[in-house]
Amino acid sequence: MNLFLLKVLVLSLLLSVAIKYGGPYLPVQGNQTTVLTAITLPSIVMAIALGWRWFNTQKR
Image (tube, rainbow, N blue to C red; front, side, top):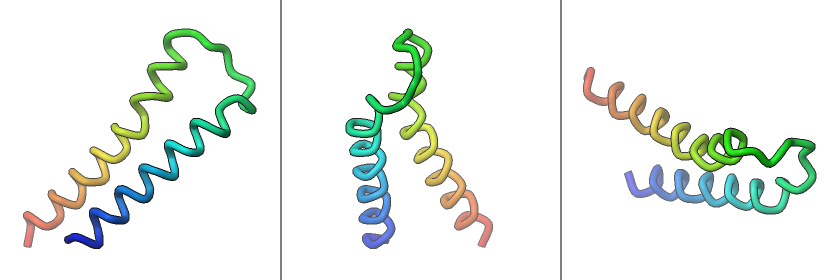
């Protein structure tokens, strides 16, 4: 379990760094929809991944 949490934290860190340093190179407009999507998408993806894992462990 601890190894899984470490993997999640490392992946989250990598996504954050990619957004911070790779963001200026993306040709997107800086409107509210784009900003909200970029901020919330990593959290939503992680929530889905963790929920899927929890759901699969509950079946057994």
